[in-house]
Length: 330
Image 1 (cartoon, one colour):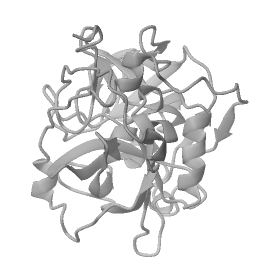
Image 2 (cartoon, helix red, strand yellow):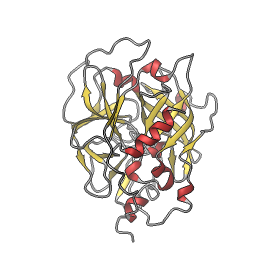
Image 3 (cartoon, helix red, strand yellow):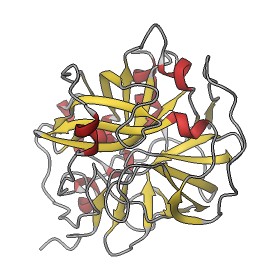
């Protein structure tokens, strides 16, 4: 039995953290894997009932953990200078107000009782995965096209297949979509995730179609980003966990001082009890509770089954920046 068996679990969809095998198999034709897809869409597919009923997936992270298990991760990229991208204010939304009540720091997982931009920019992601409806989390980010959502790589492609019927629902509220459902016209992943589902680069993007003549960032705003930043920061993580003890109906956050994975990846780590469905939710440093704005530096990605209540998220390096550049100009 592979010694890494049951080592890690991705947080895909609405399922709980699932123990799985980290396979030592080598993907076939990995280098030829496309790093983008045009999702199939069905008009009116995501009804309130279907969003509420997006079912948990029993996730086998064999494919996702393949690179970590075999030590075949992509070689470290050459050190690059930090790249900071500023947030974008919405064009027709009232200014952010102060939090409704003080929030705790650190926080291992609780409902976000504050207000601000993060309530609008964060949302649930819904898609069809191998014939089953599923969900993740995502965030609206500043981009040249004004229409880019960031999420986890496994929230756009998993086990070798690209998801279909992909939509982003900012400010999701128990089946309601106060800012509409934003349909993906194209989805992207880092080259490393697309090729061999390397957990170090579990980053995905979606470009969504405008609505009523407005882009996503015009409608809800967009958070800023930082690529090639550092570790050990004061961090906030957000998402819509849907597995017990959560139910996917509300925005949840964790906060604390981040660390660095000392096991299989170069990911950030944070004390956090969010469960399945939170994948792809944003991690911010320099987060301002009053405005709900921060600098996004990661997304919820996975947890080790033998280290409960700890979340891991990829470090945004040159690989994530390259995929971002493809998405923001699509």
